Amino acid sequence: MIIAVDGPAASGKGTLASGLSRHYGLPHLDTGLLYRAVGWAVRDAVDTPEFEAKAIAAAEGLDAAHLTDTATLTSADAGVLASKVAVIEKVRQALFAFQRDFAGQPGGAVLDGRDIGTVIAPDADVKLFIQTDSKARMERRARQLEARGQVVDRYALYHQIEERDARDMANPHGGFYKAADAHLLDTTLLDIEAALRAAIAIVDGTMARKAGQQP
Ligand code: C5P
Image 1 (cartoon, rainbow, N blue to C red):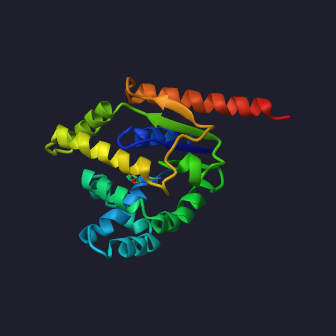
Image 2 (image 1 turned 135 degrees about the vertical axis):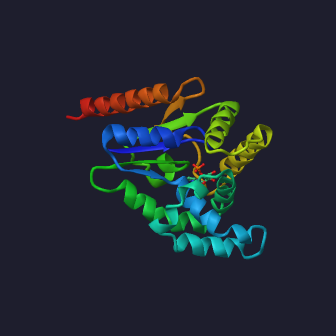
């Protein structure tokens, strides 16, 4: 079974995807980490004429060893860098095969990102599109960062999230929209446990319906 979980920055899709991965015993790939690793690798070239070429080379040379420093990669700065390399079509192409192979492994997988249900795994068995109010997303991300001992400027964080959303939604190569067969899950008023219960109900319901349709 392939489960695609897409949604905007700080919507909790990663937490949901990892909860689904544990619940169904499926491997999980946080695809944002790939873009973050590429962005981080070229952080010194931002706003230079070489940025695009360097980002493409970094994406082509990316391997699992680049994904281990999660403390750095999950920082807000790495998120902004990720959204800057994510608009480069050849970066997306270079990262496609790794994600596609992960989705296609025997037994299936859970992947979260922006374009899983639309580009990476349009054939996914269940697609979730997570929606959460921007202020709630800012507050959740602020608490995560504070729990790591960081001092948070909520005003700046809110604008950073909005700016990243705008860039992601306008990305002509991004595939960031709700697939026609995706289930919308609004988690604004749900805590993690409630959101996971709702997601599991959608997955179980979809799989049961599909099983019922089979001859
Ligand atoms: O999901 P996360 O916030 O870690 O993603 C970081 C950035 O990487 C996003 O803002 C987006 O620009 C890019 N991304 C993408 N496609 C994906 C996953 C992430 O364009 N499948």
